[in-house]
Length: 423
Image 1 (cartoon, rainbow, N blue to C red):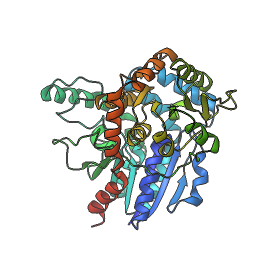
Image 2 (spheres, helix red, strand yellow):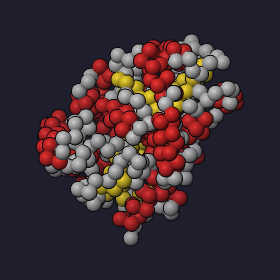
Image 3 (cartoon, one colour):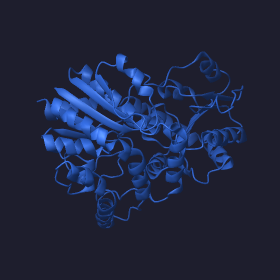
Image 4 (cartoon, rainbow, N blue to C red):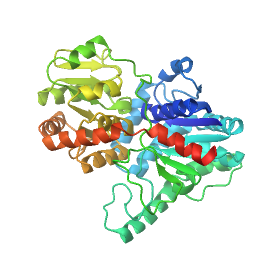
């Protein structure tokens, strides 16, 4: 088949779709991937290295680092999850919406099937207008209604309570978020969506939940079009670079270090202040640490025998050699820590990251999450010490890591897509 794929967001929203594009291309399909990155132009150099066709659309959405920090700080100070999402849409999505919709329409016109990030509503709208089969890929499972689990952040008080909670959640989502896709649809002569969850985020043809089954158990009351495929990832570096000789030497010198990264959340913060926070936490916990921060060198930080700074590094190669991972609770980093068999300390910046923090705590591989707003070096250090001395967390992480390492989300996704559309 000719397949068009489109994604938007940070590295954690792009890497899974590169892995999926690789898998579909290897399975014999003709694949085009359109990428819109919020904060980086690092993917421009990937095109000659990919087997599929790569299109870079309106990237980076926010080229001004200071403006990106300001937007990130606004999101961080907002505790309401819906308002966080509205800020992200208005500040990081709408500036690229028109160009993304043009790319969506072109993908739909040129391909037999399109696949998109669940948040990227222009592709779903374009697929509807062109009559092109459409697959939605969700990287988080907090917005799939079920009587057996409440909406994210709501206590589980039983099936009746959960149904009521989902009814209320739908009402709030439709009132607060559906206006954005509806405005795009109306502008382009497309009927407005009936429901934010069912008709904007999900596809009733196939919606893949790219989450490990160790975390996301398929609920019996989900419609058949919801399928758990597992995390979409590749062992190959994707614009992260390799393991330098200096990093390798640090990894093999004495006890395994702690890896500390806030991923793309670094771009939406005062990076110098954040690096200092992580550095102080590592020193307070008396651990050797690798701290990932894109601009550490230009901000005046210098590596030592105890702290090693990196701009980026391939997590699949480095995490297995570390003792534990301190991170922001991104879907990709959470899965990478799990796959490596390492426990986590989660310092969540957004509501979605809080979900991952609670999930890692639920399965026994992380302590209670820390909220980035108001976090201190002392609190992070205390959590590091707790995990470092927890035999239970270490053993549980190793146990689940062995299970996750056997999963192949890309292979499962390709099989599900082929069974549905290529028969």
